[in-house]
Length: 190
Ligand SMILES: [Zn+2]
Ligand SMILES: [Zn+2]
Image (cartoon, rainbow, N blue to C red; front, side, top):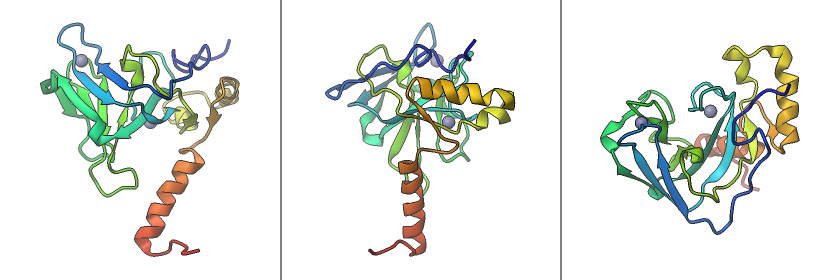
C-alpha cells in the first residue's frame, strides 16, 4: 500500500484558481479559534518533509506556502498566538492551545524576508494555489522514516505531479544563492 503523504494530495491535486481573492485560516480549537485573513492567493505552495513545519496528525509532509507579510492579518483571538522558536529563521506563530501554526514571518536579514509561511489547509475557502513541488524529502529519514521506503515516497510524489527535492526547488535555491552572491559582492554583472 502506498504511504499517506498528506490528506490534500493522497488522491491527487486540486488545481487552484488564478483569480482567487484569498480567505480565512482557522486553528483547530473547537471554541474561540485564532483566525488569520490572507489577502489574495499564496505563492510557491509546496509539500515539505522538514521537521519544523506544522503537519496534520498522521501526515508525512506539511503543505506550506508563502504570501507577502502585508497580506496577512490576524482577525480573531490573536492573544492565543506565541512564537514557537524565537531563534528560528521563520518565526512560526502557533496557537498555544491546539498547537497549529498560523503564520510564520521572517524578520532577520534573509532572501525571503517580507514573506510569511502559511498553511492553506486551515481554510475552508476553495481556490488556493495547489502544491507545486516537494521540498526536504530526505528529511523524513531524520524523523524516523525507514530509508528503504523512500523510493516509494518519491514515486508517489511523482505520481501526483510533485517533483521531489531534498532542499527547496531550483528556482528558490537560486534565489537564496543570488541573495548570498549579492551580499558577498560576487554576483555576476553579465
Ligand atoms: Zn487553536
Ligand atoms: Zn518544512
